[in-house]
Length: 476
Ligand SMILES: Cc1cc2nc3c(=O)[nH]c(=O)nc-3n(C[C@H](O)[C@H](O)[C@H](O)COP(=O)(O)OP(=O)(O)OC[C@H]3O[C@@H](n4cnc5c(N)ncnc54)[C@H](O)[C@@H]3O)c2cc1C
Image 1 (cartoon, rainbow, N blue to C red):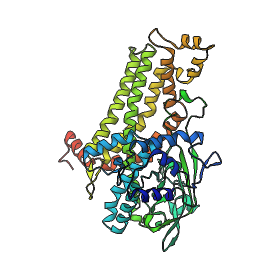
Image 2: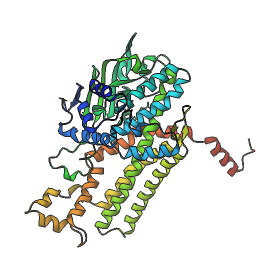
Image 3: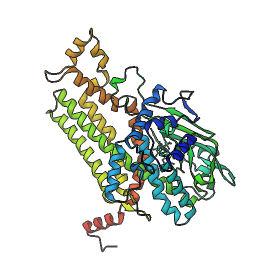
Image 4: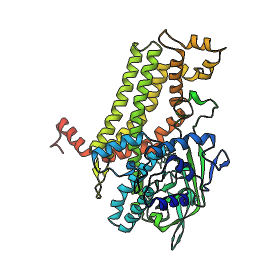
């Protein structure tokens, strides 16, 4: 892959943006990708990967630019609130790997000045890596979550030292790392794995304080995948996931050599959490933006199916839809506040506010299951049992499906069935299950979002207000 891309760089004289077709060809680079025990050699034709590859390729085509020196404009760091807002909108309209790449690059932009205050040479390496990713229009997967072993023990105290990714050998020209990063979205289809420590390391755990960039086809890297891609010959009743799905990967680093120029940090326990905090922030902003749109989709589906069922004026249905509206509105309010209260790095780039980002992500994630419950409650059992479009096309079945799925002269069977299919696909099938868990766990889980929200909340101000209300400002 790297050779293919480097040839392209040379031919095009520097920076360039590639096409979807070129992206597809770049995946044929010897990477070791597995699904259900078998190695996949052609990712583009493997049925359960093809839609994810196409989705990513469309993201490339959208920003293709043949101008020499062009880069993907989405990947430029925002220098104003307007740009931060625009990026949040544009990124969530593209594919998942464009999202993870944007979040990864923004993490590097945010971390570099902090690290650079004490280690300017590392900041320069980070900038150089970012420039390379931009120049070659690479896609990046975020590799943070370690296997972690016994959660009550720190990395250095695990019975298996490989429970967290760590350095097993230091050479003059680089380091050798071992371990695994789990649940990594899009790892199989990215070019780069951005490997970061999952949490703060303590003195004595220097080998675990490793942050680096690893190409997916580096010897020793293997990716074991799971996917919620529809496994149906006729996928028309999966209107959402037939187009948008992405495998998650269990990424193994079996003594992988990383050259010095790709090592962003090694052994600096005092900075070990800087990367995770920064990625967590960008990941949660991205998650909040996606949840804001998805919440509107939940509202729309609830209203449409209530209307199709003839129940939109019924009191309890209206109340549930009102609750969905409040849910959707508060996520969007949090997202907008996070951008409005953005901060600036020493390099002049914008990053979202921690308090609003984390509170909004927590709100969206923690209430999601209840909102889906409302949608299922309103919609009825057709969510699971509505016949398929193919049934409607079968001349023997069509009159019956039409007759019994129709609810009134104005609501056809096909219209109502397609609503049920969309609700099932989004919330009650393979993707629905994936979503239930992912909304809770992504971005470090609810616990992490609560913790960061609390850390950035102005508790002293709240105490002052409470003391004043209680009339105890002056009482010791
Ligand atoms: C579909 C999916 C996609 C994901 N994509 C990515 C990705 O692209 N990149 C990436 O790096 N990660 C990714 N994640 C991982 C996600 O961030 C983790 O799942 C999450 O951080 C929880 O870690 P865990 O799964 O190991 O569960 P655990 O660590 O076992 O956590 C389970 C529960 O235990 C709590 N817990 C764990 N340890 C402690 C402790 N010491 N003290 C108190 N409570 C504790 C947690 O808060 C949580 O509530 C993804 C996850 C999913 C499900």
